[in-house]
Image 1: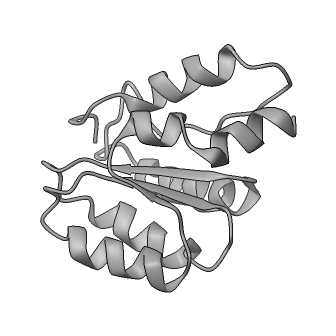
Image 2: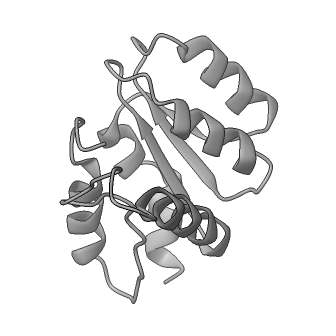
Length: 128
């Protein structure tokens, strides 16, 4: 909805500094207008298709957000083996996220820097 930190830009910049070729799917739209006819259908279908297509799903849940769609998408892809969740501990449903990640063996980080400096990212850098 455009009301949160543009963490996708930070991820984009990080990948831009890495060797290899990457395609990043970013659902954030600068001119989002849910009242436009067909906009919601287009956006939701685009996100679902690209979540399926992605080799790695990075989800960042801010502590100040409600993030119902992120929680839905996390549930849809928790078993995929390609999800990485960043969730700030002050998120109102942090324990739900923590327990779900633990149950499905999804890597969980409490901030963006922890993810960027993780073994998952180091492995990703080496394998591209």
